[in-house]
Structures are given as structure tokens and as C-alpha cells.
Image (cartoon, rainbow, N blue to C red; front, side):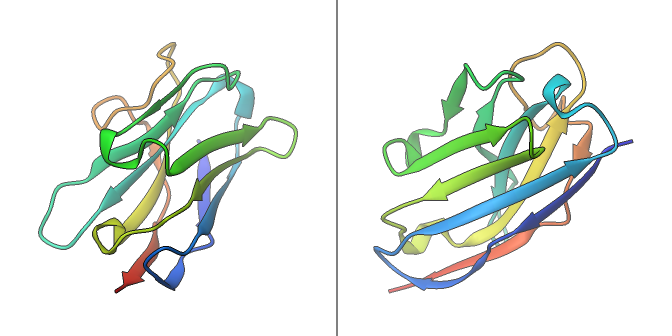
Amino acid sequence: QVQLVESGGGLVQAGDSLRLSCAASGRTFSSLAMGWFRQAPGKERDVVATISQSGGFKKYADSVKGRFTISRDNVKNTVNLEMNNLKVEDTAVYYCAATVGSSVVVTKTNADYWGQGTQVTVSS
């Protein structure tokens, strides 16, 4: 069993930056591919960024490329999402997710564990 706890959400203005963190426990963190997803009201949950077990492979949604950076610390058992130049359309609940399998990316279908989510609201 893996427990994921997100933190760092809040209310910011367009153009601001925000850093989300996800603390993992319950399993060897370096064996998990990790990802960040988001879900806006009335919309599906979509992947934002994903990072491989070693951190050597990262993948981003087109909508956040160049603005968001995913990183992980396999000593502190955390995965972070640095969000810069935030836009109103980034407003959503952000979820941390993990997959136990051999895949280097996390998808909605292979995610084994989810955090409870943290709200990010970007005002104009």
C-alpha cells in the first residue's frame, strides 16, 4: 500500500508561480513512477506531468510544457510540481499518482494509487 499526500495548493493570480509537493510512504519510493494529474469542474481528470522511477524521463501535457516542471527526490520520498506563469485555465484539483509496475509513466489507466488532491485556483 502506498499513501500519497499532496500539499502546496492555493489561490494565486495569473502569472504567479506555485509549487506542489507530494509525500509518499508505504513502499520503496524509487520503485514508483509518479505523476501529477488535474481535474477541473465538469471535466475529466487529465495527466499534467509524469516522471520515471529514476527521474531520468519526464513527460508533460502540451498545455503546460515550458511552464511546469516535475521533479522527484528519492531520498525524501517526494515528487514536486513547479508551476510558473499560471493561467486561469490551470485552475483545478491537482492529484498525485503512482504506479507500481514497470512503466516509466503514469496514466489514468495504470495508476495504482492516488492522493486526495489539492486545489489550485488561478484568478485573472
